[in-house]
Image 1 (cartoon, helix red, strand yellow):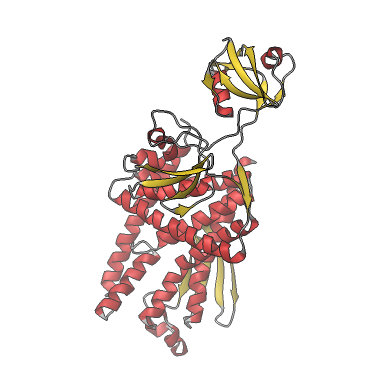
Image 2 (cartoon, rainbow, N blue to C red):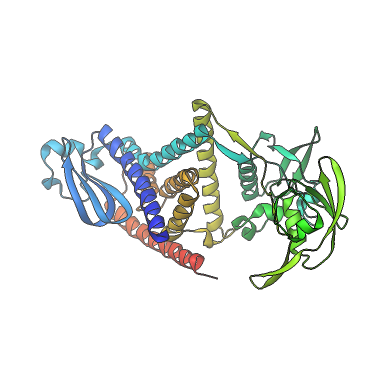
Length: 449
């Protein structure tokens, strides 16, 4: 069932993105009065075919759902003598260079518009998100050395206001890619101050994993408040009760629930001195975590529920604000994607970041299981990636065709047929190499370690 769920989530995502991309080409071609012969979802053998419209355009579903295409009346693909005289004016290469640019650019543009639409829905519907409050960092980290001590609320990064943890991560990621310093505005105990983090020391491996942890930044969690106490367990025998807040263990300050969990796990069969806040009073207890073996490791347990949640805020945006925010997110994601591609070309970022259909399918299945909000967010990001990739100046892709037409604008004449054919072959070779790398990375990534 898990495989079927993943396959369906992937197929829906792929079909949605391909259809929107190709519809962009189709709609603008029709607006430019270019005759469209075929609209295909998928590549290869035709499984389903119907003709519609005044031009009797053939709408096709093909066997391999890893792409699609819009076939227009084009003299490069058939002899002029085979084209009806009435259709010559509607042949693609006879259009002005600006019309051809518009038709080719419409596919990636449709993907960006889809991303803006999806992000706008998410911002308007609203969703609970953790606020940008920091957990206490380890003394050895850059965050601690910069003056962060925990429980500070980040309200801005380089003077740009933020509110949520996802915004903090996004702003810092952009600065890290550019190897720029980030100045955080912090609010704590009613006072405001600023700290600066140097991000140029992050390695490519840090950017590929959890770079915030490398800086010492993590999300603040709730206080170490106890939930249900298991009858006759170490916690109950020690006198601990539901809603108690553990503030110290053996003289060490317990900042949050994760501190409590880690300290107890590291203390099997060890007598612990606990300070607890109960209804405003500070009480002291002794407790000995019982030793249990989990995955071959001996850990301590008090047999009590610990509430470990970040502080969240539910927010919704108006239609105009949602569209504006979605447009900004789409733009910044596109720019960041281009920067990462540039760093891969320069060797500053590993080619392991190139992902293929297997990884995308895996993410589609995972996000669909989490919920529709995560899945829609995933669709928006993949739509942006598809738009950016298609704009790369690689022959065969839309960006390669735009390169031809840009040369035509500069020189005043179209590129020669021979140059076009040679470039297409070279572009196909580049594309095959990228696909091989992507599939290799997918297989390595999904293999059990």
